[in-house]
Image (cartoon, rainbow, N blue to C red):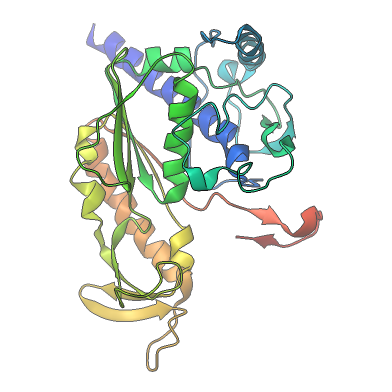
Length: 325
């Protein structure tokens, strides 16, 4: 009996992760991320269940989603690397816009600020050897009934949470369950399915603060404590069933590296007598610290998806062009 329950739990977890992968690859075009590849380390996506068509006020949209979900069953029937493929036209998209979803921040409204076309929203990710099912909000909500999901990241993770909310609002409603009026740490609850989703702002994943409190957040120098996971998320991790963590972009900023309480180097700090170890040093140290620290959390039955830089583009799209990150 216990063995059967364990297998069912593992199967459900894989399905949730597969649908989350579908979510991430579905919403990226809406935020103008020209993603051609990703470094997300994700395995065991070979088991899933058929997607059902979602309920929607628009019957045509529901029909499109049902058709796309059915076409994507190939990914559930055999192992497939969903992160190798290409962007292909998707006339059914988008499934929400700034006008239809309040969860998108005003400064992210491309049309409001003069974007002349909508074609950038009409794309979908096509894996090389299978079809990726369109995200099905009805199925997702059933799978995460009574569960909770957290995004620990920078603005990329926050945008993904907002996109998830927009997709789920097609079939249900949500209430703001934030513990404080802090835009960087938000919680939302879906009463119909007792499902909670949250985002925690932790752009470095480890402790960090600006050397000059008055300096620009975008260009100022940061002190980075590579051996100290950020308490913003470490104190909340065990409250959630699923956690999606990602970082990397902020490590490109000028940073001073502290390890064991000692200054050991920097990245683009231009400071005398301080070795520029580049972002690769902090990248490795943060990875080691976070990944090793996650083992204890995973023993508490928290499912963790961990990824790094997701934005990769080619210069002018030329086949032999160098990648810019």
